[in-house]
Length: 337
Ligand code: EPU
Image (cartoon, rainbow, N blue to C red; front, side, top):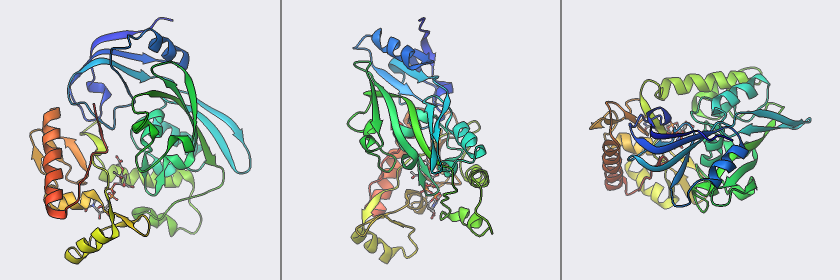
């Protein structure tokens, strides 16, 4: 099997932020076997980092090692019964193409997650979420290969330890496994989540909307609010929404009556970081070539040939001012490489 290694490779087309950095080596592989082959011949001391579409990354400098990318692109319907369908998808399959295919086939579960940039493997690692849905709710199993041994392991949903934008692959097993395929379990009956803001219009319809109708509505909302990475570089939401204690929330509510919030449980409340960032006056402001997006303050955009340092400085300044004003620490959702 011939492995195609590209040297001194520009990563500009591989990160939606548009950071102009280079990798010593870049390897794209087409199958699980090819990946195993790549790992076998890879010198153990050379760093390896795996990327999807690079839609949730900030490259902070040139990468002194090997960047891997999956071209494993298949959709395989495994079984279908009256409850649902099991669908196995290759890690390199473009996430939104998968959502599109499922909606057309009238399978429910990923329509609220339409139009999120990225690929299937990264979606399972990041536990992407939007408009009241999280991908972990439709993941049955995750297939992965261990970098150090080349051995395959199948993780059950439980073993993935999913949390808000979080999984075992971002914690204990960070950079230890490469996801090769994901087994989804989708519903064949309309099981729709329409409680989120603008999706409520669909709820008012006489009949239950189809997966395609929900998908269309989600795409319209996202297009209106989020920057198109092909026009304006970004990595989606830059920060996670912090979870605070009810006590802390009550304290803030005294000062900011209209503070938006989502109840997590009897002791915890999520406060939108976007709201705090906007309150601190950051919306639309820039530092170097990086800026807080004028339509959604959770997003940092590459406004004018931003360098990684511009983004890092802006992030630190935003974190400091949010802490100074609200006493809440906010952390990046985006992974720094
Ligand atoms: N808000 C502001 N100013 C803004 C934007 C929002 O004050 O500029 C306030 C509004 O009150 C709004 C609240 O913040 O009600 C929440 O805003 P929004 O609904 O836009 O969602 P978000 O919390 O900013 C999260 C996800 C998004 C996802 C949306 C919709 C995270 C980190 N982000 O954003 O995911 O699309 O909800 O479900 O949880 C991503 O992860 O890259 C991403 C885009």
